[in-house]
Image (cartoon, rainbow, N blue to C red; front, side, top):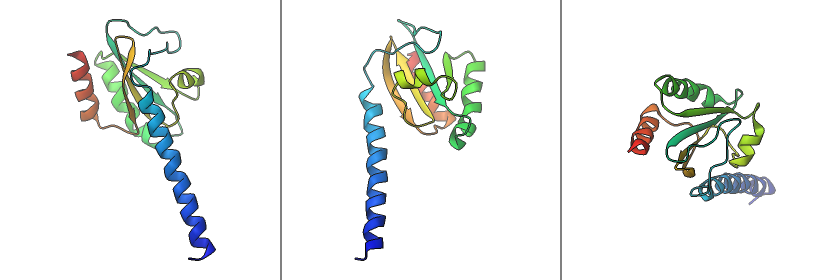
Length: 130
């Protein structure tokens, strides 16, 4: 194997390990108490969906209209632009956008990384509502 092949293998391996680390960190958040986002407190007895996004993120631009539609339908959704509220992203250990977090009874119940389909989000909300 040439040195170029070894270099490519090392770079690809590093990228895979970085992505795996992001995934594992997000899964470790499940079950922890949910910190407040901005000025809003997390409801104790209910649930809410927190959507972390960035205006420069391509997948976020396709998912944001879906989140905005859910909010217009009256679903408890908080949209957090991490370029404006980096502190909330740090509290939730957000390392990639889009990240969607379901909070139930004041605890992180589910963390979804990457873009989600409208069908999956609605299913998540139906299950959370009971």
